[in-house]
Image (cartoon, rainbow, N blue to C red; front, side, top):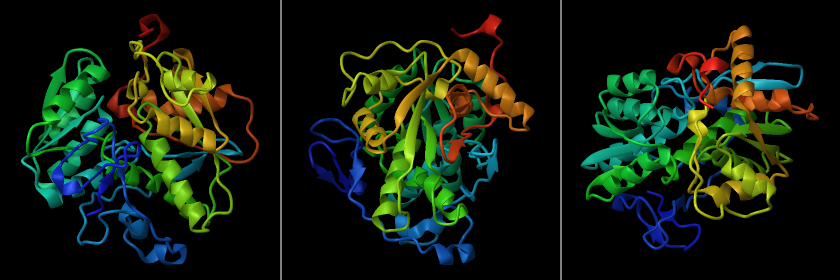
Length: 374
């Protein structure tokens, strides 16, 4: 198995040790992994899941792989220059399946005493589903106020939910304490880098479907930044292997109510500074993260691409959800944030892709303004 490496301290650890963070700085791991070029001409004959990009994936050398047929989501036009990738059409109805399958495959091989995850809903659902597929029991820590429909979905997969009073950060702290127990695999979509190597298949699919190129601009939602960081990882791999001749611009989107990364970016900071500011309520609960552990990596990736951060208001989120629904696409409020940002901004030159990350069936429509969470 590919070993973990701390991007700050260069401390290393085998994945089999179940050490969920760097023991020196307590920061998240990266993987000491080098991909090989993916031969695009051979892809049509390959398995119809994210494992088709085997050369780019850790854990791909052994067979068979755990799968629910994740990935390969459609790309549909919204305007003459903007397309949406329908990542809510995955087995558990959110893009988190891309990373969850990697974490569950890791757990399937290591067979820990227990698997633990924390989530505002979608990541926990995905981990629960893939652990069920692998025959592994898991516990999912969720904050109070998590969507009832998401809780029902997690429990339907057989996972035990631990509802933590407080917000998303309170939940993460409780999960990390439990993750320090012996024999626990912390299936964290933030701390465990296998998740990022799953989400990078989002960009590999775009590259495949667009005939060996990427759009000029990729607009991505950012809370903990797992989709953006996975995408940035894929872009560097594709460019490094000579499979694309230019890198796209990365535009990161946060809810105006909880936008620590946008504030740091526009202040010219390299990482978050000062104590975390309490999260304000927002319809975009999935990206309401006051202190993302990979903040420095996210800021660096956006700057390196020549991109920027945008924020969206609660009214813009409501309007974007309704607009997409009128186009036949029912997406949860967090999942419409990128489309809200594109609608509110001046027209960007070239082609743009936004992800629609979670199904509206998970949350229902956004509350009317009179019942606003603001």
